[in-house]
Length: 255
Image 1: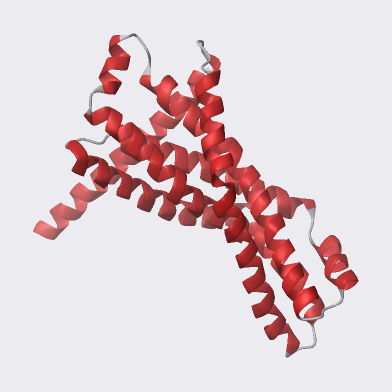
Image 2: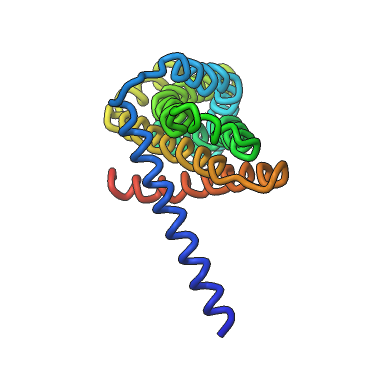
């Protein structure tokens, strides 16, 4: 019966972790409406999450759109439906690939950094020092980062989608010789505003997941440098898996 006991203990730990992360997320959002308002921390978090991730998100979106254009053009050529290349790329990026890929890239770059920074502060007792100075660690460390992720990930998602469509245009129109007018006309006709808004909503939820999980794992880090490394790894893995799982349920609800 040891494996049953182990499974039960694992389920309890997972449930406790989910509950603790949910409480931290609620606390960080509630601190938005209570002074003092730390605008400097918030602006620094916006700059780090948004501006710092422009390069990797742009590259990801461009090459994803280019690869999708090549693959879809090859597939549609068998049915003489090459005019659907632009529509396929735009819909896929707007609804699914844009939010998911942006979330994964931000997780790898920003989530790991947040977990490492807060984890290092925790093991070196800097968070205890904040409490000694009557500064709430949730408001000072967690709220700016979570809010920055919620705001910047949707913006980065739209950039990823736009650049991806541009990459698909270069490959399909300039490279494969598809008609430029048909390429854009199909996109305008088929892609609806809800397709874009659904991607924005997903990206905002993914930003909340990334910020909450990364801050929570860093906040719970212990055991010196090794503990910080373990917390960072867990933050990236859990955030990535949570993005994929959440994406499924959001897709079911929206479509």
